[in-house]
Each structure stands twice: as structure tokens, then as C-alpha cells.
Image 1 (cartoon, helix red, strand yellow):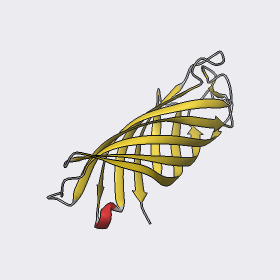
Image 2 (cartoon, one colour):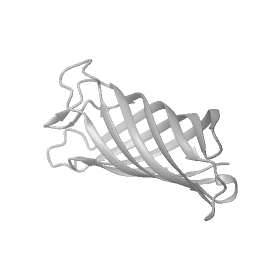
Image 3 (cartoon, one colour):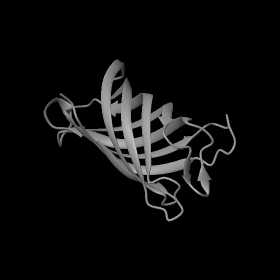
Image 4 (cartoon, one colour):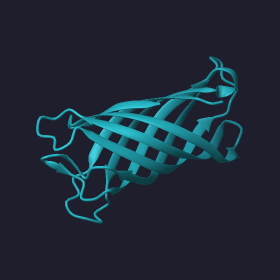
Length: 155
């Protein structure tokens, strides 16, 4: 689950994620690279006075590369940094009267810092910065930025 807010303050964000591990590589004795897929269903609640619609729905699929410590943690935690870039379909192309995304197909790129902890690293908490735009495929291309906090429980 992920919650966040856009900047400038046009929308609040809530997302549910499904994560599928793909590959991993040991990079020496202290570092590990992990690649995984993240499917998501998101809801943006517009909180701007000039909003044409109060709701924006977002469906996305993102491949993600994570660099994570693999050293035995002293505090039971494995810190990491990750980057991902994927495709999104959004229900509304105009978020506010002054922020139009130009189309329903968008790209989302994020950078995250987090930590896995607990038995076998089942818990995961991260801070993410994300930019969503159409990569200049259509005009206008105002884009939108989100800062969010993400919590994952791995079954």
C-alpha cells in the first residue's frame, strides 16, 4: 500500500501494489541487485478548487531495479535504493484546470529509499518520489509529481 501527495498540491494518492520478484544478482559480499515487477491500482483524490473531476484512477506496470545490502544486519534491517520506470493508464487526462497530462497513456518514473526488516525481510517501508507524464508524446505534457510512503508485506 502506498499513500502520497502531489507537488504542487493538486491530489492525494493511494495505491495498492502486487509485486513479483524476477531476478537477483550478488554483487560481492555486501550488495545485491534485485529486479522485480510491480503492478498497481491507484486512486488520486483531487483537492484543488479548479478540478474538472474529483477522481483519477491509475493502473500501472513497472519494472524496478533495487540495490540492497545483503550483509547480515545488526539491527535486523536491510537498507536499499531503487529506481523504476513503467507504463500507466489514467482515467482523466486533466487533473486541474491548469494541469493537463495530454492523454490517458503515461509513463511513471520513481526513485525510492527504503528498508526491509522482520523475519526473512517480509516487511518493507520506503519513501518514493515519482514523476508521471506522457514523455512528450502528446501536448500538453504538464506532468505531475508525487512524494509517497509505501508499506509492503511479503507473503
